[in-house]
Length: 594
Image 1 (cartoon, helix red, strand yellow):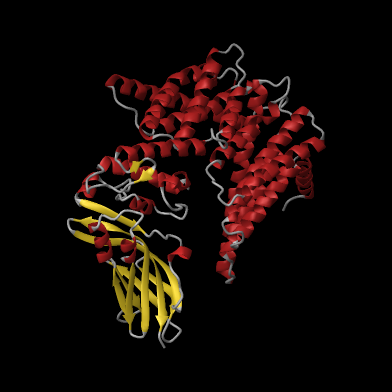
Image 2 (cartoon, rainbow, N blue to C red):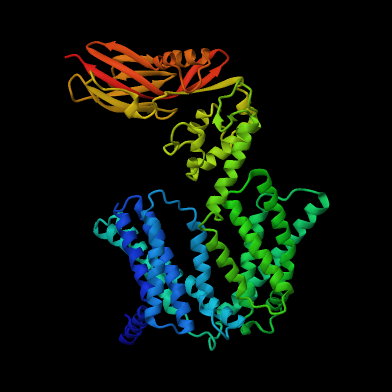
């Protein structure tokens, strides 16, 4: 049992932490509520936005609180600055097209800002920065390790009770407990461990041991491995491997933390930390040069993406840090994390940010590829003139860029090339089909693809694309919009005829649409292959002629029903002389003559 003195001490520490960090603690409580409500299916897609806002607000308000404490700001100024930041981070919540990628830069940048915020005042030293960060990292790992152990114990207790006494414990209860520990218990415990003044703080024996006997040997060993590999590829004239950049960045980050910890007076007299202090940043110059060479080749070949932008930011940070700490007479280590925080935060927004720069880079590459292959002429798309008009290499590169733009929700950047909005496109193969090209998956081998050649990719679209322009329902009883891609090939529609209870089922196979009831012969079927073949023979191009538009409407009599299928998207492939529809979108109209 916990003694009364211990309980009183814990309560006093909690009260002191709440008074010291009221806004960060409130953010932790908000994150807990969001997590619990999200586990019970509240908020829907908005839960991610609330999570991100809570995390950004927690980190930013904590940085403000630490800065205000170091500079002796009045409580009113601290509160005002924190609330302004909370409102600033709240703005993206109301943008329904909010892109989450910028926060992959902003959140780490704010986290680094927390580590340097207490040191923006006169008189601070590198040793003070080292002591505070040692306390911060030790408190972080201790808090979340404690939360993990406590969670494991609580879960084991609940499982035992459920098994022994037959009590049902819902899955949401386990999730709620985990959310409570990770978003409230652990962060508040971390806040409790943050020192107000590091001047008199002594480095613990555990911190000294980790720095001197674990981190320092690992950094030196990995430095030797990197130098050996760089020497090997230099002598053999080989290109560096693709993962070399991540290895150098990981080495730079861990080495920087180790160097910061080695500045503690507790490491004086230990030879490994002394080596790290003196030689880490000069030794970092050669790996950073290799990092610039690696990322430079990747960008020259494939353009900029968010990942390569991040690698470039890391290279700039490590490069400037290595030069500054090697050649500067006044080596103030605080500028190393400050530079990283500034680069990360600036990369999260604006036309210079990672998302904007990456989008422009990839669109420029795509535009060049399309123009070189005569698929984009004077800003307008043109279908391939022959089966083999576009090489495999070009198709592969175009597929990779289209895949990137689709997955990162940047198709709006190329909407101007099309006569319709691309925002609803979710699959790269759909966009490639609209370009009249076969989509090549990144894992697809060249011989597998070319074994099917010669193949022509066919894609046509009605001039009236929107459903409002597409058809008139006058004279029909029911209508539905249906889309078939390679999957799914069976759709249960909302159309109900006959007994008024069983909805019609549509099956798509080998270019034919069958309309009927499950387990029964189809009431009618539409063969779309002749439509695609006729458009191909006429060498149709968008916009279609009135005569070609008529080919997109098919009408069948099925007993007492009049069924009309009005196509507005049709795509497939032509192998030798055989045409097969692979995807179709259409309106299905039914008039039930009772």
